[in-house]
Length: 202
Length: 202
DNA sequence: ATCGTGATGTCACATACTGCCATATGTCAG
DNA sequence: CTGACATATGGCAGTATGTGACATCACGAT
Image (cartoon, rainbow over the protein chains, first blue to last red):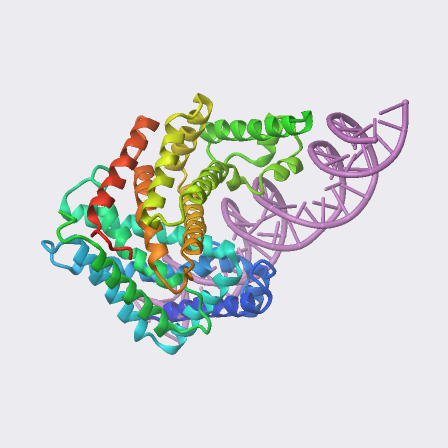
């Protein structure tokens, strides 16, 4: 990896970390872009070349999650029942979270805490989650060769599985503990699996 | 109802209708607030006294839906299984949509068409939907006397039922036909009911 | 008729973003 | 090592969203 790319990556992480700390310290709305740019000694104009908007700072981690889930989904055998594939994709993500680096864990928890105090950001996050689910639906529908806007089944499969993630994420972080969040997601997923009638998705 | 209130209501609807027509004509992003205010001969500052933001124009109808669902939920007998109460709340909403006034139907379909061409607005709408679900979860949890952040059950109940609404809403409106949308929501809800194992929510 | 309350308009202002062009810096070929 | 190219960055000007403060006007109760 060239010097250029490394430098860019460094700037991106620096902007993210500076922003998270400033947000937690003095509030999201009270932190202008200029201040974030100032903290990492970068022009405000440059900020928008790394993140399309202020919100995007918060959604960026989320985008990474979506990406890995789509990759796992693509690697599952094509003849596997879609619900099972989805549970695998979610569990792979849970494992990724369990074994994340301390820095990543810290960032995740900072975002999590921020969402508790800034409803607007929570909304954006859920909006992005819905968007992710739409892409997952399309992936599953494509694999089955059905039109996702004709059959509701792919949509239901995704909704049922992702419910576990959303519910686990919603429980208040007090104190913030990633392991606890992951465990709750796993428990909820098992509850969903138990609640469904065998063969419901055929 | 006094003249004052009637006038306010008239202004609100005028702003909404003018905005929807302008948005559909020339696009959401290309329509500044000033133009909407100009169209109903009101100062831009006044616009923000009726709608907290440009997005709020689109979310306003949605807020009405949430309100009626919460009311229906509150009227259901306390000993009814929560999942059944939720299905009643949703079906009440479906009936409201079926028998809406032509003006309301037109507004609904305009919003629906707008969401197809403006992803950003679709995101906001879904974010608001998640927020509504949160309030429904709290209502159901309160009725059962459980902490919604301890037990995942109220959350699952709401997610499962509202999935039908979301999926029905998502199908493309081509041509826009409210009856078709309502029918699709009802079908999906029945599919959800069939997919769940009896007694799953106890 | 009049007075108080609430709706509206006007102005000033902070902040989020965007386009444009000049400059600086990494990259690669010779 | 050097020059040419590509790309990242900075600065500036401009547009749009949203907010606070204050004056003015219209409705409504007495």
